[in-house]
Length: 83
Image 1 (cartoon, rainbow, N blue to C red):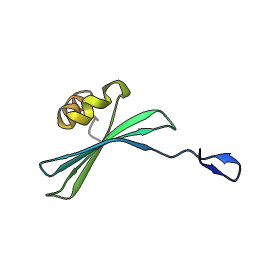
Image 2 (image 1 turned 120 degrees about the horizontal axis):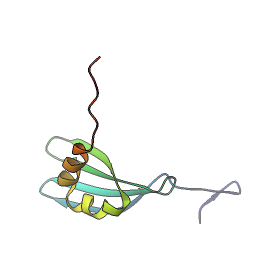
Image 3 (image 1 turned 30 degrees about the vertical axis):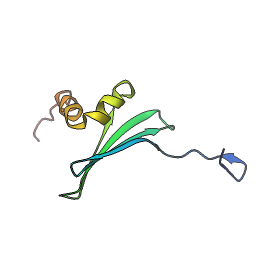
Image 4 (image 1 turned 60 degrees about the vertical axis):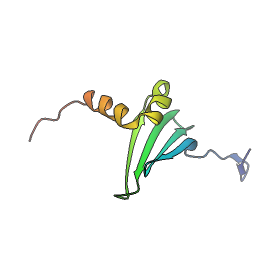
């Protein structure tokens, strides 16, 4: 275990899995601070990164099918009224 000045050191997040296919890199992370999971998708052609939270019980599904998971997450968004 890592210790710093007698205190427990907790990493902000841990990489659980990574894969690359067709110029798309997908990584799955877990945060021990709040037990949350996130998926990050990096597109080599545009050099853009997309990151989104995913429920822990759907983390592997989000990792293997990030765009489908993101589309279903967008269905759950609440529209914001225009000001």
